Length: 133
Image (cartoon, rainbow, N blue to C red):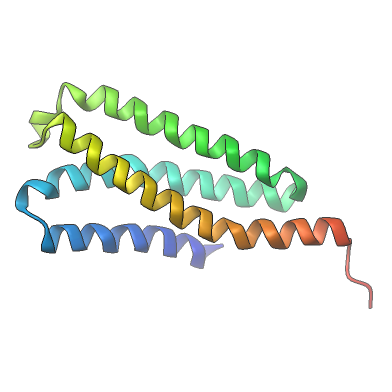
């Protein structure tokens, strides 16, 4: 569970480092805020989904849908709360929304890729039963 979690966090931070290195200086602030908005909910939902799937393997798809809804709700709530204060962070509401959307999709893709293996293994184990030897 730790290695996939490091891949999720590392992949997001490597992308942020690429933005900071290759993008304009105006992109750094909204990109950092976007990571701060999208990465914690992605980590929380990943951990919860893995835990639930280990306890109840067939509940995997439902809990993934709930987790995605939770992540989207948290992201939109933070965008609404920060919309009026974006200039205090050195960005515009539009740039913040654009970068947050990009990082939301990135973390969603990374999490989906990591969870596909977890869900496949747990579903196969639940339907096949314990191995016989």
